Length: 57
Image (tube, rainbow, N blue to C red; front, side, top):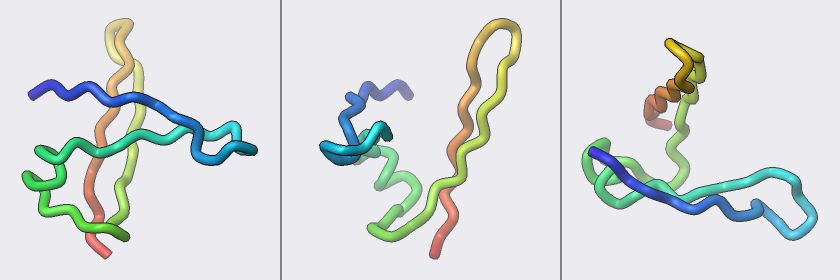
C-alpha cells in the first residue's frame, strides 16, 4: 500500500512539520484522536526505512 501526504508547518512560529495520517491507515489500525505513534527510523542498503507502530492510549 502506498500513500502520499504533504508536510505543513506545525504552527506559524514552529520549525516542526506535520502531516496527515491517511484514512486507510486510520481504519486499518483503528486509530483515534489521542492515540500515539512510535517512529523507528533506520538506514538499510542506502534507503531510509521508517516503521510507525500505533500505541493505543
